[in-house]
Length: 353
Image (cartoon, rainbow, N blue to C red; front, side, top):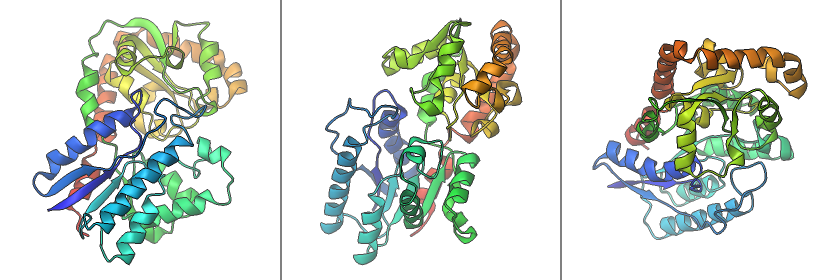
């Protein structure tokens, strides 16, 4: 029996990474049946509560986590535990472990498949890696990891297209890039229980406090609405979902968004999404839930278009019941196309080495 080795990103309780850590093995085991054994390769999370400002993990501690995963995988190769035909699922492809996996596979003559899920990186100029890292080296690293993987997964067409374009991936290699959605199936039932929760006339802003999410706009809008800025509340996951389930509207003005999990979660819980017509939101959301991108391209633009945006939000709050049918259509789109990992899982299980 072959093995699917899962290389997880650090499981952080407040983020989807903990849900992935728990849920991806379950999804794979259910789909693989007796064809594969599923094993998670942990790293050492020596600073689980530590975060770099503006990021969801610590840029120092994450390298300890990845390095200890790499050491463990190296032992598995050396001890003969990794067999020809095994699969590796790297749940965040911005991980240097891809290099030694391919190195050992090639030089030890143990053919394996590497499947990598891309979230963001230096190839995206609006991501923290894109605007803080020197531009002369990370693009080469990202391209090498792309080529080292047999399959690369992107949750949206926007993300996939940006990756291929910005890194100059040759047309002949585009078949290694797969638009696949992401493995969030198990949160659907968890959140739809809130659909019928009595909503408060509140607007929720669910993002981390970073420039690419434009928190200054959210703070300014708080003078017009009962605005919930979750990062100021120190909520655990259960309270976060409860607060989300009570909110009438979920609002985003993000510049950087390759998928936008928090907005999707809120839609599942019954909130009306209000998002800019840009980034991944453009392909994911119905026209009635999108406002023109120029309204929040920066704070100066927001100031100019503020009256229109305030009216857009207020109209949705005042007429929430009129959007229920559209909201159900929106929920169906997200569940079918973006909260669904069937393309990815089938590819991992059914593709031969």
